Amino acid sequence: MGNVISLSCVLCGKLYEESPGLYACLACGDLATLRVSYDYESVTIGRESLASQPLSDQWRYLPLLPLRNRKVSIPLRIGGTPLYPAPRLRQALGLQHLWVKDDTSNPSGSLKDRASAVVILKGRELGYSEIATASTGNAGASLACLCASVGMRCHIFVPKSAPLPKLAQLLIFGANLLPVEGSYDDAFNLCTEACRELGWYNRNTGYNPYTVEGKKTVSMEISEQMGWEPPDTVIVPVGDGCILSGAWKGFFDLKGVGLISRLPRLVAAQAEGSQAIKQAFDGDGKIRPVQVNTLADSISVSLPRNGAMAVQDLRASGGMAVTVSDGEILEAMKLLGRSAGLFGEAAGVAALAALLKLRSRGDISSDERVVIIVTGSGLKDTGSALKSVTMPPPLPCSIEALRSRELH
Image (cartoon, rainbow, N blue to C red):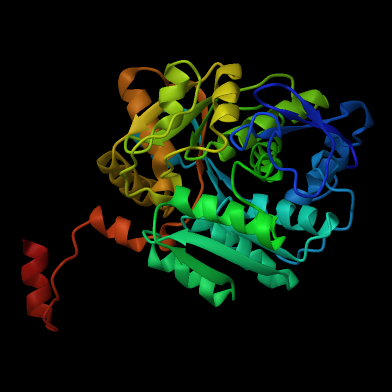
């Protein structure tokens, strides 16, 4: 596996070698995800070599990705997304050093393209010709988008609550869309069973260990964009916990090869109506299913499959978990749009909603260096966005009507 040493269970530590059909620990079960470990001594990557090329995409970190083939065959640009200082947002929050990592500029409009790209290439290395995933929308749209670009057939299981704009993406990209009568967790279980029965590669978030490996490139880019001085705090929207673990893994790997000298703390931003990871973090660390009820569909998960790893990573970073209400998420959506010119979906702005809460509690100081990650475009769920604003009535087509409205 190139520079990969092994895969290890997050619960019992059992070591595995890569093999087709291996996703989770065979001893501990499907909730025991596998960590990918690298031989840092054999990794050839350095600041000078990276500085000699533009920050174009995530493949610049290929020596720290679990792929044998060093020739990337995905034609779309993955990663290389902007890190904005957002001065008006800084002023609104009273923060001197705040940045917004905008991953809405990926091909399908979400951070999950980073994971899908790595998983597609890994699936091909392992000999698979078809791939499947369960999704509330973003992971499915991401997989469908990138599979279309390389001509690979994909199957997407979605719950009946998935937003229509995300389903439109799936259908336009030509995916085999499979709406499931049930929740995301029901779709997840059916997808897993189908992959076992039909021989498809399983991309399921938090189950396929290489999803974390793809998502970790977001924090690698943040580190490089900040001159290899990582922020003090990184706030991440959390559902399954895979993006949080990916962010932590990126910083961890960079420190392992000597590109950064310290690690930031992470903050998990969860919806109040889907807080299994926060409850585990505040309690005994064990992931238990919760009843879900939130408009932030991308982070609405009853039983987080990457939960155990996310709790471990959150604790290792010295971080914390914060819950935010749907109302706070909608307010954050407006604030991000009006002060930074960025349109994030409900789940995508959960990190900003958490930052607002942390600032009000005094848990983030004014001189702290903070990065929030916006994980998905607001165009994916305009229905939620419209709940945060008031649509004005039609205006009669006359200058007098305009004057009257402007005066009021």
